[in-house]
Length: 422
Image (cartoon, rainbow, N blue to C red; front, side, top):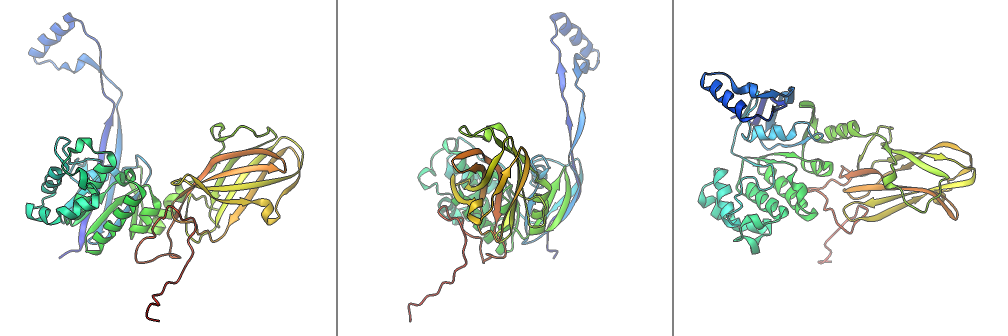
């Protein structure tokens, strides 16, 4: 028996951009067009066809997914990821090519997909299970576990039209994951859930894969993709740009999207002088390649330009790190703490480079604020000029993904023992 779960060959999907523009007609026009239609004339001349162009959402995509594989699919918005999943799920048909699915599939593509708003959560569990091809006895066997995982016990007999988007997602994921599909497809819908639910879902998908089932996971959360998946595929402009080991694919994708960030007026604050301005900044790795996601243990490099409009005896810099999910500053690096300052500043642009070796911030998303100051005076400071993510790496790799604690900032290795007997 072949170990292939999904085989895609030269798959393409084409859309036409443009529509028929209707012009306003008089009663006489309608009578004339009615007569002409009875005579067999084409009524398309009622309107003026807008200029049309062709968009290839997918173009000659080919790949294979083996049974038990955890495939992470990454790419920018509009790259074709969701189109691919809809074709695999038989929601839409390809324009050309072929995809072969070997096994029962469950897909979670959009909030509330396959749910009927007027039915209760209980009724939708059975409806969704039936759509996935499950027998009632199998749904009965897993029902309590589904409800407990979704955390909707109090609302299970409430119509789902009254559910929040988060409750929709929790219940839909619970049904898809617990009814024993051989292939599980999950799109970016997990972004609707809170942090604890996302971690629970990642753990469940990992458990599903360990049972020999196949998982396709699409997400813009590079940390979640890297922690969960073993292989990756980068889709760009409807084509497979790269596939292979997940860390290599994610690293290449991130470097392909990164670039310098300008400090716009919306991020500036009142109370600063007009003697200097941070103009742009960029994050790089130790090799100097642009990057906005780093493995734990990597070196983070921040380069930024400051334009000065005055003379000053000495200028210092502060770089603050803010954890985005907590909304709290977690780290402050100040140049004078390590004996660095720019002496005798004159009008012109200066470039500053800061290196943070062996960064062990917990895997989540962060943003950076840069401040330029001298004692007693702040020249400029800019919030959110750079954003980046930390990703779990081999430095911290365990049998399961790290728990993203809301209270934690750094990861430090530790050794634990049960010394009760002693």
